[in-house]
View 1 (cartoon, rainbow over the protein chains, first blue to last red):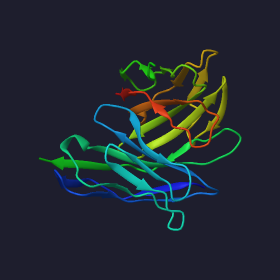
View 2: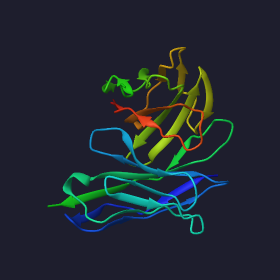
View 3: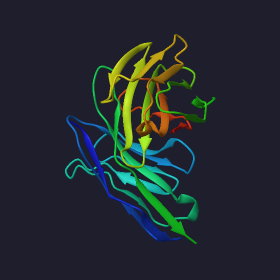
Length: 114
Length: 114
């Protein structure tokens, strides 16, 4: 079956530091890959996505590249802010017949200090 | 466009009771998925409804059930509540038809079972 593995947190950084959150996956076929973010007290919201190999998703300074050869989709940001403190979820979606329920990783908590 | 709404936002029940949670998807979305989020297990898929039919089901006992109405609104029911059912219940909507679709999450219903 499909699975997503994320690095365990919490990841604690100072403001303006470089961020990497690792994500690797196992899936059949050619999945779509996602990063979702969950701020305290809220539901998840899409941060970025990529639907085919070598695609780069980007949003709000975050980037991730779909690497089929290493089955990875690592999240990066060059300079984090306190407001980036949240839980980040890597997810994949694959299937057929109109049914594409995503599989989520366990989430990685990011804490950014001023 | 209004987002996904969930009611109620908070709920306190006692063991043995039953509970019904409601989710209104984004207009035009026909797929509604439900997830249980706990610190120990992370985000776990409960089930998905598409056009009033359950299309996918996760690995939860039969005490967890759901339904979807013709306007795509969905309800989730948990009978004979157990302490371990305390969690944040998230619903997510999407068109339900395309590969690589984004799921749009509601803010969740936080259920506490005493």
